[in-house]
Image (tube, rainbow, N blue to C red; front, side, top):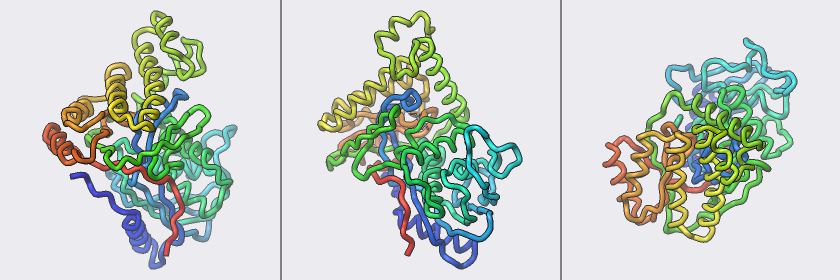
Length: 404
Ligand code: GLA
């Protein structure tokens, strides 16, 4: 059976209870939520200025709290982060990040440090676009599984940013908000991520995936309303420790390949140009670039297939994407390959692939509703019982919540 997903109301009452328990009797006055995401296709293309096709999930992070006197912020998370403390207290800065001043010096309250989870908090406050913020107290609760490749970090960043907007509004520009959250992750969590996760967490639309062009940051909603179909997430429940350093290395390899090809980014390169420069590139750069160029074109085609209801074709490009991530980009792993292979053995499954950064995490599978139980059972048996499953219902993006 797929794992039941707690409702937003349940998360809000959990947050309210935790707030009262930790900060005294009064209930929180403001709250915001932001979703995790799953990417249907277009992997490792966002930082190459290419296309991605993600949807926002009903798995969400909620931040609830109240303004408080003074210039301090106290944040408590309900999630377990290894042995790290769950509470942080910060002195709020008078100003945010400025590109000319760079990162705050070590020892200042908003420099990255421990506990690690709080770097997302420090980063978002730092990159918030309307300082100075008033003091506040807040709690964080989430139904997005941590470290599963479903963007628990982006959902925390965007939920907190949306919470801060209730405390002290910025100009309300959604793209700048996503970019500020992406910067928070880059400067404070040290991951040179692309824009996909934060953008879909901000812009997600119920009943739709978004075809995002990561160069102009424009998105086109793609309806996912066929009641006979379902996207199923399978969590391998494995995470490889070098994932973020390998991610950074892939990004660097792409930038090098683009430079050798004389392009601003791999978005501008064609397969023909790639083949013509194969000898200059060397084997690794060639294969990385080949994945990216192929994946960008697959993603555009995939969005068309979805619009036309051409699910066989959509499933086929999902599998091509997986194979390319496995063989050319080398970001898959045995667990993910096994999950994809097992899913593809079930009749009524159209396609399956790893999703997100890779090196563990989840797969995404497109199938007929009628065969969901059979698919879960088969994959679970083949995988040895340790996978978890979520129905990926396309959901709305970040928003402020009314507390009654
Ligand atoms: C992670 C990053 C995204 C994107 C994906 C791979 O989720 O945060 O920006 O690059 O990996 O597609």
